[in-house]
Image 1 (cartoon, helix red, strand yellow):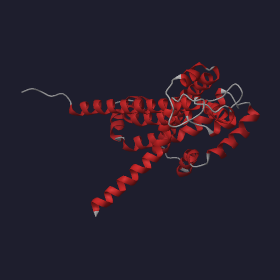
Image 2: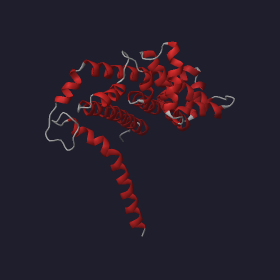
Image 3: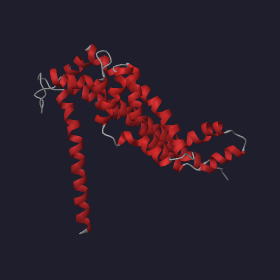
Length: 273
């Protein structure tokens, strides 16, 4: 009976994963179809929709705009989120629980509510539709991911290593950069990757604060779905999937190399008799 239950559980989990992955996978063959509309299965294979995507000035402008925003958001969210995590874990702050809840609130509050609030705030300030406005908004949405990963890394970090550095004469800042930061680097890197993906894939807030000149890739996709639905949409979606998977793959590779170096350091040099 236990084996049957385990088999059924694995089957259910497999079906759920299949249900979640299939819509993403279907986009790829649809982007290769020869028809001028979305069809599955495709009647033929062609790369003309990718050529149309990469040769179109509007699509490329939106793509590079999204990438620039994502990179700037990653830098800002990583710095702010790391400092916030250190303050929440190490600091003796009044109302720490409330501060932590406020920091993580963008993960709980519906993005449509946040988007309306940001639009009402940014419009009078002239921040709608420009690079600075997008970076500020996306950084706010991405910081919680960094806080979560860095907090977990700090809680696993051996505090005696930092104390040893301080006892050896290092100051707080030097001890942080030479001892603490290398120890929590995997958590910081994971938070940075999630911040990049949260910004690059963000659609709801972008729909509200995009302008004629400052338009993200997700906003451009929304517009073309309404007015010009062609397989170029599927090609753009595939490009987003590839960028996301490449980013996650890069993180996994870095973590694997870090684990290998850590394992080699723990073993240390061996002596021959």
